[in-house]
Image (cartoon, rainbow, N blue to C red):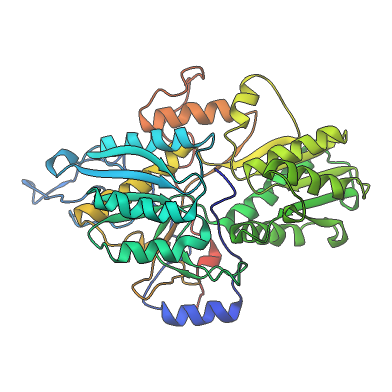
Length: 450
C-alpha cells in the first residue's frame, strides 16, 4: 500500500478492551464470520410462491430481498445501479501522489462507473495539512456528494468535525481509519470516528512475521533458530507502525527465535528520506550483530526499498528476507527479473481495495446503509469507538506476494474486476475464485463471555 504518511496506533490492553466491550455490547460478531465477499457470482433473487419475484432494493441483498449490510458495498452485477441518481465523488489526499496513486484512482474510477457514480479523480495538498482541510471544504462547497479522504493519522478528528458539519456529504477514508488521536500520545489509537475498509494493521503485522518464518523454514531449514536474527522497523511518530510492529512481535515472541535475537530499527533516529533512514537503521543493526539468517519486517514499501539497499550493500542479500505491507515497486522489478532481499509483501492490489470504499460511499449516498450500520459483522468489540457508533473495520483480502505468484495475482485482479490492466500476464487457468475474496474475522476482534 502506499506511504508512511497515513497511519495509526497500537494494541489495546485487556482492561481497555473490557471497558470498550461494555460500551459496545450491542454488537454481536461471531468469531467464525467470514469477511464480506464480492457478490459477482451470486444468482438473481429467487422467486417466492412460485411466481412472485422478490423486490430487491439494494445490491447484494439477502434471498428474501432484505438488505445485507455486509454485502451492500460490494459490486453486484445482478443489480441495476442505473435506476438511481448519478452522484459526484472525488479523492483528496494530504500527501503528494506516489507510485500507487494511479492504481487507486483507476480502481475508484472503475468501481464508480459500475455503480453509476461519477468519480472526478485526485486532488492533493502535497503534504500541507492546512491545505488538505481547506480542500475538503472546497470540494464540499463545489457540490460533491461523496469524498474519499486520505489524511495523516493525526488529522482524523479534524476531518470528522468538518464532515459532521456537512451531514449530507458521504465520506470514507483511504489507507487508514479516522481516529481521535491525541498528538501527545501517538502510540495510542484514539476513538474510532467512522467505518473503515482496508487493512487491520495488527493483523498485517502478524501475517508479515508468519511469512518470514515460513520463508526461513523453506530456504534455510538446517540453520538453527538461535542463528536467526529478526528486525522490525519502527517509527513512533506514526501510530500505525506501532500496530504493525505489535502484530509482528506477537508472532515472533511465540516463535523459536530467541528473544535476544529480536531487534528494533528505529527509523525516526535517522535523518533523510524514508528510504535513506530505513537503510541506515537496519544497517546499524546488521553491522553490529552476527547471524546466519536475517528476517526483516519493513512495515511499508519505502522502508522495504531502503532495507533492500542495506542488505545488498552489506552483502547479506542471499540470507535475508524482507517483507512489507505494500509492494507497487516490486511489480516492475520482478517483471524485469530483478531480485533483492525484498522477497515478500502482504499485499492487496489497489483495484481490490477500492471496491468496498467506493461501494460504501454509494451505499451512504443512496441511503442503503449508515456509517454505524454498514459491515456489522466487522465491528471490533475491542475497538468499536464513536458516540454514534459502533463502527466497523472490514479487512480486505491480501496475499503473500512473491516473484512466484505476482503475475498470476495481477492477472486475477483483471479477471475479478473485468479489466485488462495486465495483459502481459497469462490468464490461463485463472478464475474469479483463484485468490481469496474474503478473510476470517480475527479472534482478537471479539471478547467471548461465559
